[in-house]
Image 1 (cartoon, rainbow, N blue to C red):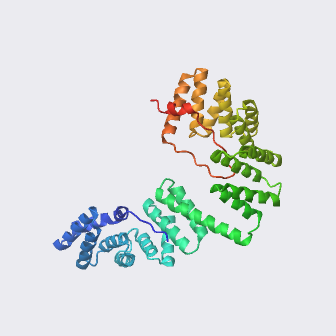
Image 2: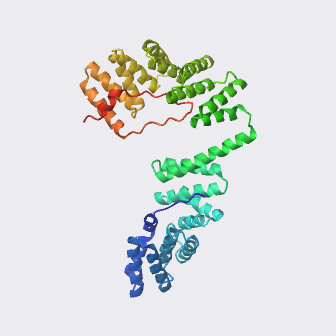
Image 3: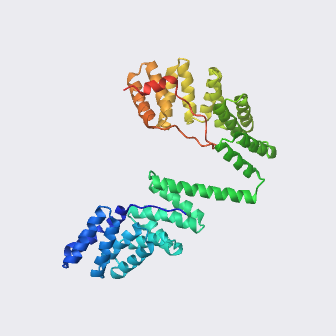
Length: 403
């Protein structure tokens, strides 16, 4: 079962204001002492001590809603969810207008696995509250509640919204990633149960094995698809990618030739498959057949002007054949399309230097160095849009270290 850890400081911030007002206005010295000591214990992170102080304070001042609200937050942090629920409801009776108690109650009910009761408050907290942290907590708990209730499509919808609102939050990314993975597994299981021998199931098996680098099984699955539907678009391309990836991983004899054969077969079925045409051009370039590679890259770009990797590939050939003036506009286009492509910036620096544009060279080198120092290797999933990326040459590493 998914569990979430929320920072107590964020939740307590909702109630510190009201409690401090109470402490300042109390005429009871002992009550004021408990309030001050409880606040100090919270500040120091001594939650058990703070809970003891506020429990004593609640006995002295049972009619102060803020005391019970603060106790509810502390109990929630301590995962004493039943106690938190009781304290929230006490605070609500004493002061129905105290802010955020509905969300805290819903979060506590969810923590106690009382999903049906928690759901309305969590949905309201996630969809209607203006407070970012409350919305985040309610959204994370909604993922857990929807999953526990078997409402997987609602969990995915909430995950998509969480990713939109909190795109860089590590906890959100972790839990939403699990939701997507779980949903994908459920769908694939349903596909297996309903159509175990279908083309779609075989294609899914091929893709899963490709992703796991189980090359032989992926090749077998994709070939089985072609036995059932010899002219199915995209399958020869996927086979070519598997052969090419295995060649790059293992340098297995014949795999590159097999990849060429499959990419060529894909273009015979679907001449508009730009990825297959790009891969053939890239292989020709690797083999040193620069004229053939240039011709194929140009054909790809004529049909797909915004094919960024093809622009960078063709520019690389132009630089290698001492035609940098032709490479510059290609690379300027590429860096505009994808500003985070360090290969494009490095090749633009080379082309600018060769054409005498010192200012352009300096700008491109600066962009390259910044990207090269902070950007991890690109992970390309084995999907229909994946192509073999252009690579930096050996001189680029030393260039990136220069001041």
